[in-house]
Image 1 (cartoon, rainbow, N blue to C red):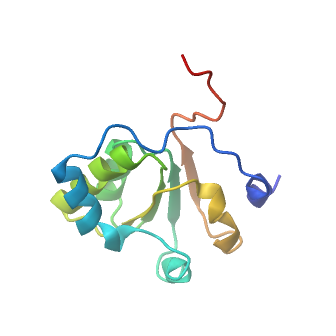
Image 2 (cartoon, one colour):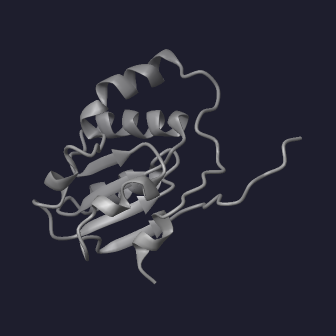
Length: 136
């Protein structure tokens, strides 16, 4: 099965935001904007690294940060649509001055079509939450 087939009709069921971001969370998002992927810069990402790891659902970034620190020659693409944990992850990236991580703060299926064929060396899917929940 081709990974791009998942992006045909994406439905998103998870949360995108929790509580209002703290001042430090807002600052992390503002200062960490250079780490965000967008459609304009995505082609540049695939031009400078051979081994690229895509981590979907990075949460607060613990695994992403530790992996990037342990493998400085790899490029890590972190995708997680939950803004609050993205802010926490960016705070750690800035704190440790990590340069081999880029962040997609949304559903990864929205940008998969822009990835060159065979560009991802490894995919990590952590704590998936793909099903709709009944509100209580």
